[in-house]
Image (cartoon, rainbow, N blue to C red):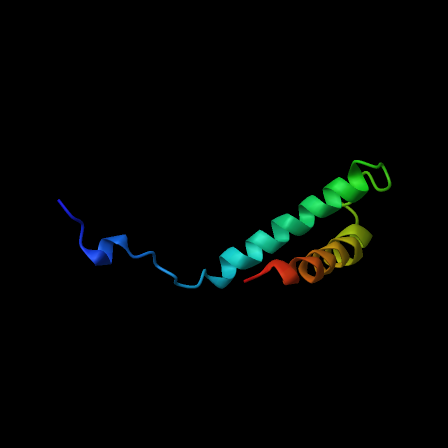
Length: 72
């Protein structure tokens, strides 16, 4: 028994903006965790104003810039 072609087609709809934003936020947080926290440069990178206002966006922008060549 064959499936109709509509069932076989993969939907190429764009992901919602909230899902993309959550993905980039988690990726930024992981980069801060691996770079700052594991090296004991800043143990509380997520609990200080400096960490939330400067360090997290800085690492987030680095991730976006370095990720860009690999996007389709």
